[in-house]
Length: 486
Image (cartoon, rainbow, N blue to C red):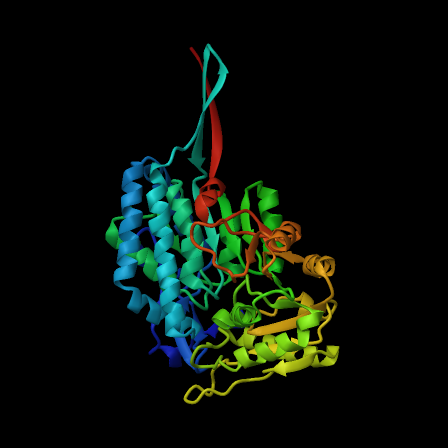
């Protein structure tokens, strides 16, 4: 049982109950057990979620395996039509989905609506790609017809975290489906409702039973069973480095491919010739969006020493515009709330200078909520724990540098490599630095404008493989070469 939830008891019978989605229908857990979750906005009991086990996973995998051949042979245009129909339905009910997302995560309504729109875009984008060629003809010899084609793996396991529930599920499920795979997914037991609702909507618009299956429960009971299931031929996981390593060990034993997106500690470099007002506003957005619970958060601010003090003043002014309970949501789980509070103590012990925030936030009417103040620490060195570890809260650290070479050295001195951002009016410098930063995505004079079209993934401990864009389809299919003597 996770730290974020406890077994439901008789007194919780009035709470809404959420069951699995297996074979195109709601399915109760074989054990009859449920996990009680709490609202991040109030700390009160919120929902009873099916506590799945290996038996439930076996049922879902069997349903996906039974649907696999039929879905693979479904006409591509029909797969695309269903994907577009699902996107349309999600948009038509976006307010209801956003309310579910807000209830589970506490994020402001504008953010929840944005997440639903982004989720619909994945199905829309990949649904339109069914008309792309799936291989090439190779000119090998006059008497040989040689061609390649991309084919689905079969059953794909998808394991997603609690911070962006529906968006991250859609990010993996949509390209896997359009490539011809079937799905067994496990959302976080803390934030499962919109993923279940997406699967229900898929059935309503005509997806065959068994193409999308959702098993609820903990990583230990459900996630590991998915990775170990014999019929699961690839796994996409988003989450912590520790769990990613554990999944990697199982996948290595089974010799199956993975897509791993494991987080970051991304550098946001501000040079002295930058538009400082814009850079400050975007920098604060970069570590407070979704209460900092974003793997690509720009939490390490590297600021050129000649403008350091002036930029700190601008940061403080921008942070004052971020109001918990209004445009800043709570931390989503009790465990994460405690973890972030622990880093406030760590920062003080390491000698960082608190510029703003650094404590719990009180929100009227939500006194039991998991809110913390947006926080920035100055005079940080890259060796401090708050500069090296992913905090996953609205906490940024500011590190001074002298010149371009030192900025690049500090940026790359990290176990992670997900994104990098830099601010400079010198285009030559921007291109030089972008080339030298070890990260999967680089942004210049803008923060994190990724779209469904842009491939996403990391270097080093941030993981491997790519999601989003046309590139993702290649990670959910493998290549076959056919040679015919003529």
